[in-house]
Image (cartoon, rainbow, N blue to C red; front, side):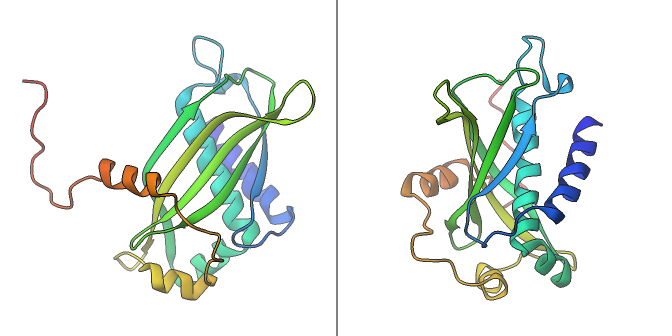
Length: 187
């Protein structure tokens, strides 16, 4: 329930937040709450993924892309995601999630997200680093082709490219397109 209210709060805040370009870094601020914690008293690993969702929606709102999606009847879905942790976040700590679009492949968009706090000297320190591969679906059914997406939001600058390792990761973790029964690994 807490994440629902956090999402509503950030949806409201993003309406008044500074506007950014489609390919700029969006910085979304958060505070670790008691309901974010696990039994070890640091932020639960699953909460990081939920906060990444909230930060991506903030990015979509502040870039103006969300309005385009609503007008066209499109919505985003996560196809795959990965995250690495360096340091724990504890209750009451303020942190920022930096989100940016890395680029596209033939079917999807890639977003990089970093959980950042200032270190003792005030320099930004990365606590966790995540990547998502997402697609856009049509409310009427089907997937939004990348060409149609880029026609709607504008072509990406040349420096917006997906690293080769991330494309390889995407291929490695892709689920099969068919609905055949999965072989059991528990035998």
